[in-house]
Structure formats: C-alpha cells, structure tokens
Image (cartoon, rainbow, N blue to C red):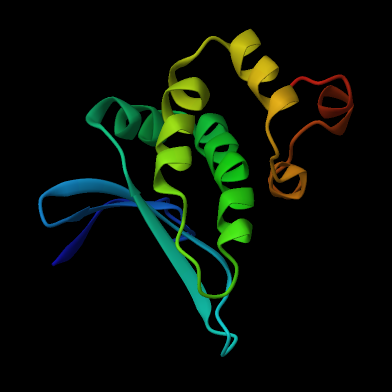
Amino acid sequence: MRDIVFARRSGWIPNVIREDGELKLMLGAGADANHEPRTFTFPIGEAHLAVIREDLARHLLLWSAVLPLCDAAGTRGRLDEDAAVALLDPVLLSAPEDVDALFRRIPWDRGRLVAHGADTRLLERGQV
C-alpha cells in the first residue's frame, strides 16, 4: 500500500510516500517504451523528509541530482537506488559550500533548476 506523506500544493512530484511502512521519495522522469511516464522510488529518512518539507531549494536540488540516474535507467532499467540514496545527505543535509562542491563533481539536470527560477549567473559560477 502506498500513502502520500508529503506533496507540494501544485501536486508535482517528487513526492514523499510511505510504502509498506518505509518512507520513499517518488519522482517521475522519462517515459517507458510505450511513452507512459516512469516513476522511480528510493528510501529516505525522517531527517530527509524534514528538509524536503521545509526547503524547496534543497528539494529541487535533490530532484536535479537524481534525474541523471533516472535517465541512465532508460525506458526499462532500474534506478540505481544506492547512488540515489548516496545523494541524500550531501544534497539535503550538507553546508551550502559543500553542496556547490558536490554539484561540480556529479551530473545534474540544470534545466530543472532553471525552470524553477534558479539564478543562471550563480549556476555559471558553480553556485547552486
């Protein structure tokens, strides 16, 4: 059974769900072979949920960082959950300068941040 624990008012995903007693982040990315939207989930902790609830910027950064993993899964593959989980603490719980340093080392979806109002001048200077 899947229950939505947290969703932004607009209803866009990523959402936080509880599935079989476990908190998970659920996001939509890409399409399957029939052009239907694909959704991916991976486990998160209570501390991650607290940041996602309170800090839209960090929520968007996480989404932007996980999207390349979804793209790598293609139309049928599985999300590399270990890689997604490994992004949680560095993106959601680290100091801003550490987040900037992380985003200089990992692939991420710049368009996602720009679409939600990121300052392109800061992005060009390596500040997410």
